[in-house]
Image (cartoon, rainbow, N blue to C red):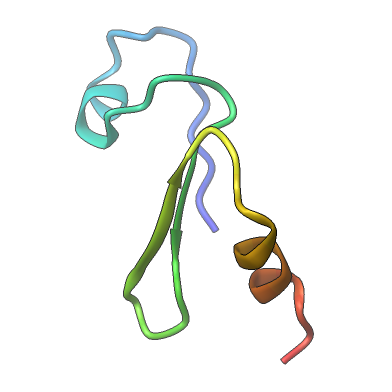
Length: 53
């Protein structure tokens, strides 16, 4: 998990990740494959990342 503190919306990381709001999530699966992005997380993805497996 990575957290980026945004003080200035002109920060290069904001542009690199195309962040549009706070919070904003970019989720990858255990295999490194992209799963979801956006200001919210779907219930399905939330269940997958919170399971103890």
